[in-house]
Length: 298
Image (spheres, rainbow, N blue to C red):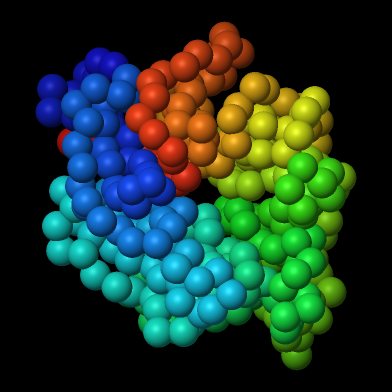
């Protein structure tokens, strides 16, 4: 991909699960680099802060029933790895996003939507969908994907439901907890879409006011890339953009080129062109969860 800036570079950052490592490549899969060789356990969500020169990622930890998940950070070249959130604070942190000097994430088995400052301090629970071992067994309560709409001050998240169960849902709530409310009994939560195959990660395009999400559920509408327009009354005109994924997980919007990159546990990275509404296999590099796009030098 060419840029008008002679020193600009666009790259994909990817979390591989077997072995667990952080990788970087050009948008066509060439120039593959291993930034961190051994992440441990099961890395899942990734995002990048170009201004500060940092990559952030979540790790679900070795025991998904124990609070041993973590959120870490490193520099863009993989150096200066640092633990930000851990020590029993989270169980299985999933997708991660950054907004207004905060990190937002979903804690799947913790059944929570959470945030902290970007240095890992001031950890807060924004939404809690359940408590205890019995609730944890109900996958309808598992929070997975997360996105923040700063323009309207909303947080969006998915609750995926059982695998291939057609019980997945997408919700939203104001970023600010109502006065006197707790994360367990918020009455300002909206159910935007339901009966989805198994929705996973989310991303918002603030310019087009579109919400994109992946779904790893069963056919005909699962294992897909989807989008819907964000309206004043919720999500409008949901549509399936691409089918045929092999356990679709992560997505990364390329707003400059009007494209979406999608990762899958099957090991392929796909590119969907929003202008021509066509999809193609970009490359294949192994079992991948989270994916992020970074442009530097612009």
